[in-house]
Length: 509
Image (cartoon, rainbow, N blue to C red; front, side, top):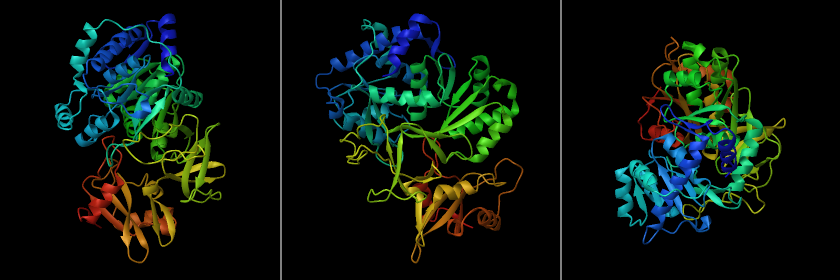
C-alpha cells in the first residue's frame, strides 16, 4: 500500500501531525503507527484462534481477510490504516447493504474476521455455517488493549493483494475484486498529479469509508502525508465549524454533499474562507451545482473526476456538468461496439480503458463477469463517445434507450432539466413501446425546490425540453412520484424508478 512508507516517514519527522481526525477523536502519525501494531495483533490473533478458518478467496494467495462493517468512519479508517503495513487483506462492507448481500459476500469471499455491531449479520452468517469470527467494535478494542503489540509495520511487496473492494451492493449482488499494493501506488501517482492531495494539507471527506470516494480520499491523504478529516455523515453546521477551526482547505465529497456545502456557505461564508478546493466524483455533476458553488465561494475551485473503483482514476472535468472528461496522461480510452470493434469519433458506444492501476479481475466466487479482455483493456460498461479529443460520458449501459432506432442517453435527458425553476429531482427511464421499441419518460419527485417557484406543469416541462433537447430525446410521457428510490448513498435508482411506473405506482401527468 502506498501509505505505509509515508506514515512511517511523517511519524519520524512530524510525529504530532494529525493523520486521521473525527469530530471528537484524532490520531497523530506517531499514534497511528503505535495503534497499527495493536490493530494487527488483535486481528491476527482472531484469525489464528479459529479451529476451521474460512478459506480466503483464491485470488488472495492465502492471505486472511478482515472486514470492517461499522457506521463509524473513524474506526473503519483506523483499522484499514492499521492493517496496511502487514500481511493482511482488508475489506469495508457497508452496514446499510441488504442483510443477504452482506452475508453472501462474507461467505463467498472467505472473509475470516468481521468487525461489526450488527446482530442480524451474526445470525445470518451462523445460519450459513460460516466458520469465521464476528466481533463488535467494542470487543475488538478490548482485544487491542490486551494484545502484545506486533512488530513495526513495513512497506510490503507491490504484488501482494491488500484490499478487497466491491462494485455494487444495492440493486444487484456485489461483485468483489482485489487491488494489489502496486495497483494502488500507481493509482495514487495518477490522483496526486491532478487532485492535489498535498503534504500537510487538511482534507475533509465526509461519508462512509465503504464509499470508494471516501476510501480513496483517506488513502490519498495518508500517502501524501496529509490529514484526513472524516465524518459519518454531512452536517452543514458542524462541517462549516470544522472547516474553519481545523483549517481545512480541501473537501472530497459526493455531489449531494457539495450542494449542501454550497447552501451552508450562502448562509455563513466566513466559515469557508480558508477553503481552496472541492473534489467530487462521478460523471453526472449538475452544472447548476458548479455555478452555485462559484457564486457562494468564488475563490474555491471545483474538480469533478471520473473513474471506476475497479480501474482507478481516468480523468476529470473542470467546467460544465462533468460529462466532458479530459483523460489523464498515461490512461488509454477507446469507444467500442457490442462486438468490441472500435467506433468512429462521435459515435456512442461502450467505453474501454487501459490503465496500470486496473484490478486483475473480479473474484470468481462472486461473479462470472469479465473486467479485462485478453488485450489488457477493461470495461465497467460505461457508455460514451469521443468528441473533439475529449471523452463525453453518457452513463452505464442501462442508461441508454433505443427509441425509433436512435440511441438516447437518459442521463443527457435528465441534465437538460437542471436549473428548471420549481423542479426538484428527476429520473429518465425507458418504457416499452410496440412500434418504437421504447420511449423516454421523465419521472419527477413531488414537491417544488425551495426557490419560490411552483412545481412546473406538464406543458412547462414539454416546452423546457423542446428548447433544449433533440426531438428524439424529448420525453413522450411524464410521471410524478412522492419520492424517487435511492441507493444507500443517495443516488437515484433508475431500474427501481422504472418499476414504479410499470406497477402503476407513479401518477401520469
